Amino acid sequence: MSLVSSAGTDPVDHSIRFTATVTGVAGIAPTGSVSFAAGKTSLGVAVLKNGVAVLATAALPPGKDSVKATYSGDANYNTASAAVSETIEKLIPAIHLTSSANPAKVDSAVTFEAAITGGAGVATGTVTFKDGTVTLGTEPLKDGVASLTTSKLAAGRHEIAVKYDGNADYGAAQSGVVVEVIVALVVAIFAESVRKSGNEHVGILGEEWRKSSFRSN
Image (tube, rainbow, N blue to C red):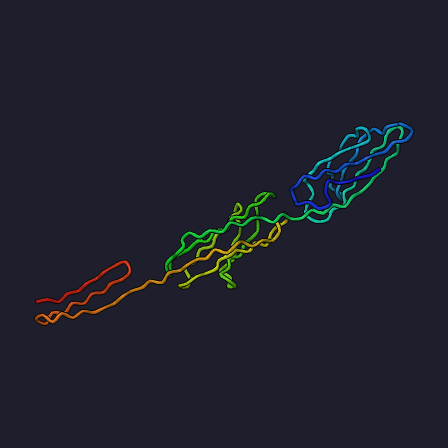
């Protein structure tokens, strides 16, 4: 009896095809079925057809597994078994990182959102938001999305990225960099003296406001 798989190394949640072959003698074809298992976990049962039983499954967990096929036997043949080693790799997810405001003003709240997507279902766990080498915080994923809000970024350019540590199905991953620009508020102050009968005019201009005070006769 022999057992082969469609590939020796596959990503998680990818269907793998196992083929068990039971060879007869004297022109007598084996009948019955073949049970497939990974350790103590049953993967399924397939009926022999022309001495061949095939099972496709995506149920193997990440890691190295030994898959065993056991032939049930029939009136002419005894039971038999064969095994094959299969390594299931974790999927590396994609990370989409966005900013709620870019550029943004100093002291204004900016929300960074990281969405983790892949072919192994909804991502769980946590992501860490970083400004260059400085950690801004770690947030849990909810429905594959995590967000962090901060108003503490100083004026200038900030290279924001997130790191995902992975879970049972997904491997660790890091996003690309989002360059966040924080703009400083520029306030111009000037004084103007008008020498007319002792009158003085002082104007103050801000970025978004203007205030004037007058003292006149």
